[in-house]
Image (cartoon, rainbow, N blue to C red; front, side, top):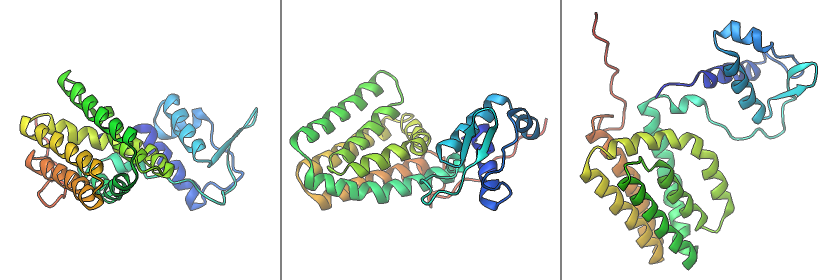
Length: 244
């Protein structure tokens, strides 16, 4: 998956802040200067700067420019944008999901209400509808997993999953794209989703954990079977371009 230019620029500027090359109170170079220095458009600069501002690392002073903010007492959680860069990173995201979503399924099995369980069934139907219409179903799939988080009754899981979605979306697009190529893959995914919901409705925490973990492990196996990664989860070597 290609790295966005704004991600690359944001990472470079954050590295300068972290290393002390840019200190609190220092004025950031102008848009024009950053554009020329890094060989990107001004819109890319604006997007990168806005992303860093959202993390509280930069502040704007009207009429003066953009400055490095004082170091916050608590820095917000953020991942390196390079987390979306390779197939190896896709597998890493799946491992993160496996650890997190296994325990979320446990709590959903213990705490979910009838209304939340009905919501899970509606989410499953939405995935099927999207796929039948020829769509990739990424939004619907993410909504399904988000609904499991909501079924825990703990709003912190919903907030964490909402934050992670910006990183999970591209990884899920790869897995669902791979699964959409084969009817047996799609059937397996539907069965795995239904097994998670059935375990939650049965209020069986151990079975819910096993179903959620199996879903992510099987997804990794499908990537290997689809020829996108090695069976051990490592990335395949990049193919050299044929000489012209």
